[in-house]
Image 1 (cartoon, one colour):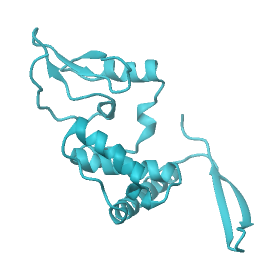
Image 2 (cartoon, helix red, strand yellow):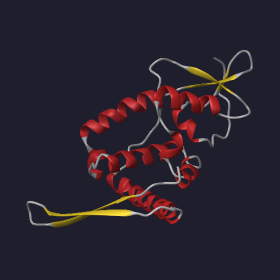
Image 3 (cartoon, rainbow, N blue to C red):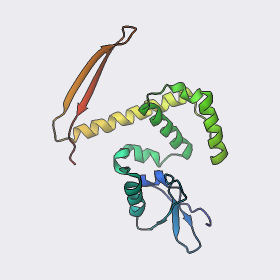
Image 4 (cartoon, helix red, strand yellow):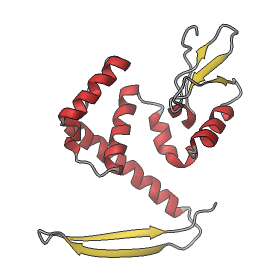
Length: 181
């Protein structure tokens, strides 16, 4: 494999591939990050449909449903380190982890391994994650408002109320709707 090419990478499928490299024949190839072996796919100048097909068929990931258009716009306008912070926030949210997860000894050991493999990456602090999480919340809220605003079906709500062992009251609301698909 020869040199790495510089190119603007706007399609969401690029989250799953390394930047394309030019091979001896002049063609560009990109390595799939999800495959256990070094799987290089040819990158066409006309589009990324073969890469998208690979991710959908082989890894069973629906790329278009993962991120909203606002998320994609910000994702590809940011540095790799900012992308890493955004992925950390999404991990913390989806797994209901505390902000201080990034301060644990095990997390720091994991980052030391990543630094050795990927170069100079700084570990974000809990306050940075908290700030990023607020930003992510605002983007997600706007995306949900847009989705519900464009919805042509009815929305069904389910509620649940409970108290914790320390007598703190909680209410949960779940919304269900059919999208246009």
